[in-house]
Amino acid sequence: PVLAGDPMQLGPIVMRHVPCRPLSSPPGDTLLYKLDKNRFPDTAGFNPRLVTKLRYNYRSLPCILDLYSDLFYDSSLIACVPAEDSQESAFLNQVIDTLPIKPSQTPPYAFIFCGVNGVNKQSPDSPSWFNPAETKSVFNLLLKLYKKGVRSEDIGVITPYQAQVKQLLNFLDESGYGGSSGLQKLKIGSVEEFQGQEREVIIISTVRTSKSMLSSDLQHALGFVASPKRLNVAISRAKSLLVIFGNPHLLSADKKWLELLFKAINNGTSCGCELPDHLALLAREQALLNGGGDEPAQDEEGKE
Image 1 (spheres, rainbow, N blue to C red):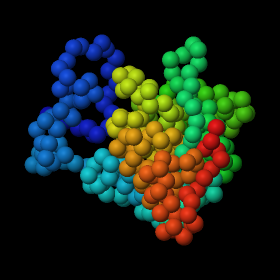
Image 2: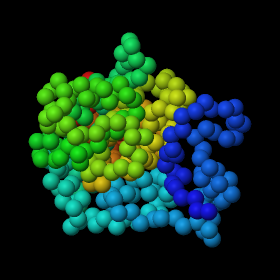
Image 3: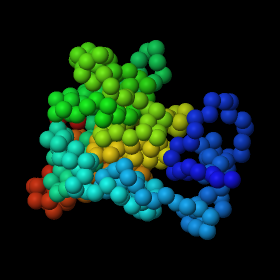
Image 4: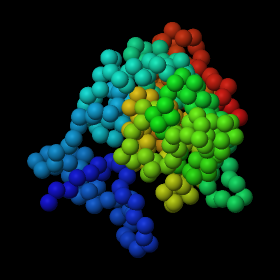
């Protein structure tokens, strides 16, 4: 028999009651994951004699691939999309003027983190969450991409909460860009809805700003914090451009997110609201190295 799959990404969605199980076997662990990790913990779960690890990536620009390769695959993935002279690099250069911050490198760095100091809210009739400040920031970027000629089917917006999906769709409709006009083919959905798909542009709205609700997110398998598989799937959907809107104060409490924020800061593509002190210091040092003054880029859209 052949067992195929990626134990570092989300497994299939199973609709059933969860039976009692020992604490050593979390509900999120798939059979593939258990076979790998339990038997070969010293080689990232892979038995080199029996397992073929597919390392060549034909989807993402190298700088995007490096994000999830470094975070989840021991930096072992190999980019097959050229950083220059490729369809993906041409697309990135086409839209570079629409970004919240313009990368200074050549070729441009294709990952942008935009800090948003918003508030996660609930409607009285729904347990789900939305973030009006992030909704506005995402919409502004979508509008710029649309006016630049980017097809709506080339854009994906990923957010972990259904209320945020609804907020974004309503915002598009009320602004005259949803429904049967403008961005009607734009897909907005959860990580699970995007698994197995890809887009030229992936925009992620993390929504959450309240640390007190993280335990509830974990219990109900929601959100991005402390959910590495969900984060991995989300960032690996992008071919040419990845833009994340979120609260850096909350996200930096998670080890994987902290590493991701470091990537943006080190490459001068972090903007938006003020960063936590430990990240702000790094951003100032990087700005000096880049010859851009002593303050990181700020964006008024990052404030509510």
